[in-house]
Structures are given as C-alpha cells and as structure tokens.
Image (cartoon, rainbow, N blue to C red):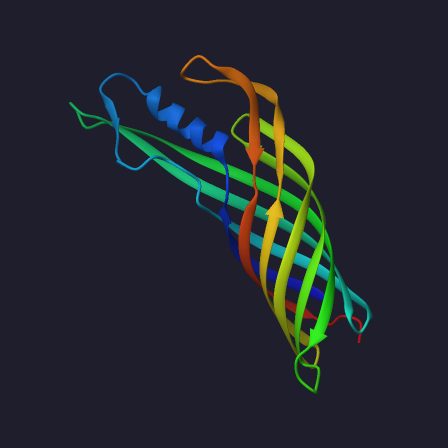
Length: 199
C-alpha cells in the first residue's frame, strides 16, 4: 500500500535552538526591543508524510516512511525611538527515513478496524541555521487503522527520539562556546491514507 499523510508534532527539548533564538534577540542593536514579551521557542512542527506498507502476515505490517518535518519561528525586534523593525525567520528542519514493524490486532469480526503498535529505527538529517547533523534515531507508535476495500486510513500517535551534535561549535552571547545540540525529540499526531496498489 502507498500512503500519503500529514501530521504535527510537539518538540520536547529543543534547548539549543531556543537558546540560539534568545541570543539573536540579545545581539540586536542598542535601542531595539523584542516585539513579543514571550521568550522565543520552538513548540510545533509539521510533517508531510509518504509511506510504503507491506503486510507479509495478517498480524504484521512493515512500514517505510519518508518525512520532512518543519519547525518555524519568526522573531522581530523594534527600534523603540523610530519604530523600525528587524525580523528573522528560523527554521528547524528534519528529513527522515523511518522503518517500523507494526503488530496489528483486529477489533471487529470483519477485520476492517485494527489497532496497532510499532517501533523501529530512523535515519535523520537535521538542519538549523548554520548547524546540521545526521543520526540514527528511534520511533515508537500506537494507532488505529480503518480498512475499506482498497483504502486504509490510519490515525497515529508517535514518539521520536532524534538528537545529535552539530560538527560546528557555537559561540554564545555570554561568552561560552561548545558543540551545538540539534534535538528533534518529539511527540506527534498524524493521519495517513493508504491506497492498495498491488491487489
């Protein structure tokens, strides 16, 4: 089955990207103040999804997923005397290939509704500003699938563990310096529609 889907996730610990954005505000020219009183941070990211699913056994479904996760935050500082504003858009992106093995359990007699639990590794490439890293992560997921004829709809709750250090050091506003941690660990909710292309 070939699947297409969309989802959104909640970052759990993107501490260095959040710190980077706070430093950007602190480095603003004299007289410029943040437009928003809230500390800048990444909260949500969005996921277009492409998947290929194979069911070698009635209770086992293997799933290969390609994803592009995009977290966005726009920050503005404003000149308090003349009203001029300076802004910057920050993107925290993750391109991933994930393979999961899902155990399926039918919850009706016709076997058209299944609950499933799955897990597996993922290969991830992350980019934030001048920092990037490639690493292997882990995914666990729980969901429900509705099968009608040659179409299947899945609702999925997932957890991703994805973190790696950049190969570049970061000089922070307070004078500290060290390797930058790219952390895309998150919880996500997604919906995927699958089409049977074999039979």
